[in-house]
Length: 141
Length: 392
Image 1 (tube, rainbow over the protein chains, first blue to last red):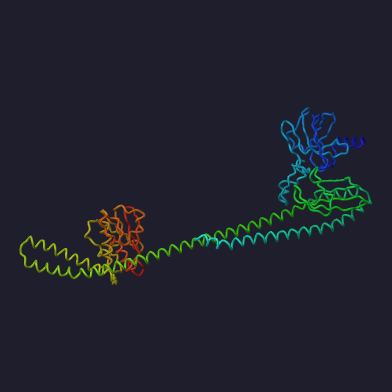
Image 2: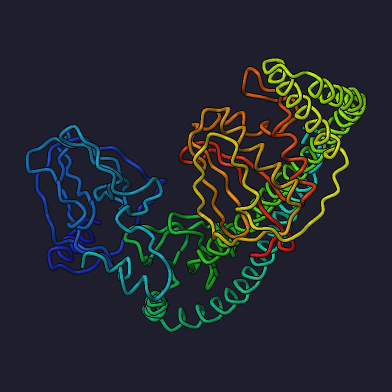
């Protein structure tokens, strides 16, 4: 398992694509300090994501996938205390997809309860709408 | 219009609106069900194809299957694809990063999502291996929305039409009752005038002979008396008796109005006995086809009325078969304008209320429509002549 995790990490560092999804059955709430903020991680088909490394009170580090960087402009700094609700996507319970993040007295919602990304608003149908707004999954690229 | 009438009128529209709402909801739900059935039937066929194709691809290798599914994702309508092996997802892709709302239930299935309805197809391509395909089915929501908009448009049009019809009927009803009221009032006035005429007729008839006798006796007495003073007094008494006789004659002629029309110049009809300055804003040769005696009576009454009201000037104007007589006595209150021509109505302390009533009676007999309004300087009486009644 450690090998797989290591491979995944290598994959991330190389800037490759990886697909994972928000499972409402595996929700979790974590509280801790931000250890690092990365910006170059991607979901498959997604724009570049902001990934937070959060260390909880027990010393465990979680990698929290938030949202595309254009959506998550007001982000926590290294050393800041955060509270996060999200869902694990890996077996090791290390990677989390965030539903909301609470810091500096403010709660920032990123997804709905079933994991629908709030930055991907449904656009009007038709060629004209696509021409005007682009395809939703290409937004922010 | 009474409450009962209003309710009776509105009830059919209300029933129509309820029937339409019920009919629409029934037809709409049926149509939606038909569309759903059709979509699910198509989805079942597609699932069968996916199962067959998926089996072949899986036999050739998982990579081929994943490539095939990735190619499907290029289609705009495909929201997500996934492969499940023994209860765990081994491959997935979504148009919305991280969002994979697979249902893992009976297939095909339509369920709601933030992007609208999604049609999910689930096909078994191997033992414990399933393929999921989520299709954007928000078109169904759009059909529902458009259908509802259509309903709202028709329903509001129906309500608007009802409201307009109701308003129109109320308006016509109002006009009808107003006209009926006018006719009733006119009938009442004629009735009163007829009674007045009967009274005047009998009174005049009774007075005529004694006044004539008085006049004749005064004439005889005047011949026999030579004293100047007495003769002067007698002359005055005779004049008054003559005047009384004239008044009685006039009233008798009014009761039996039978106009004798002829062409006559307006300037020849003007009574000049009143202390008024007459301003003629008419053609000096203006001719009217009317009864000179009766029309002079109208003008005489109008001018006397103005003089008694304190007017110094009177203007006579001729505009498009309308003769306007306006004085400078300041006019009357708006509330008195409507009752000005009614018998026994007078704004003056010593007035009998007969003068203007007689004016209208005579005007009607001559075919002249008469009305009063307040002009710039004072009361303005407007007489509208019928086409055949005047020659200009």
